[in-house]
View 1 (cartoon, one colour):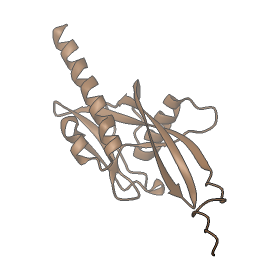
View 2 (cartoon, one colour; view 1 turned 120 degrees about the vertical axis):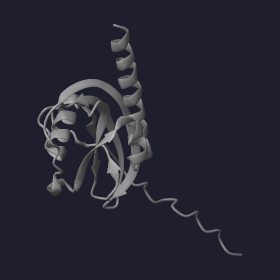
View 3 (tube, helix red, strand yellow; view 1 turned 180 degrees about the vertical axis):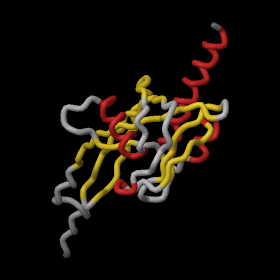
Length: 162
């Protein structure tokens, strides 16, 4: 009589999950009378939002402003309200990473965005806010843009009522 074999994976330690935090921005600007959002093409040739890793002793807002400036070259950035934090899990170099990214609404009135090629950013474009969710490649980032859109529309309604 043969002995039963142990189930696969039993006795082997589960890969440690590394938690990473980052922050980014939904940068808005009025272009030809229309609210637009800045989108970037990342190293994977997908469209998304500028974001990046937090450095020691930075607040999420400070991280967001620094990373957006680094990835897009924009200097005229004003931090708005915190929108949402999204998270996802992926593997990198054999490690399991659980990443949390907090996004902020940001405003920029001047300057032309320039992609930071050293960071793998190959393009920056202003896209009408009401169409940006169609352009963004990542579903979770698309949802972040929808949150920003609802806030911008609410602000427009409040200003019209004043």
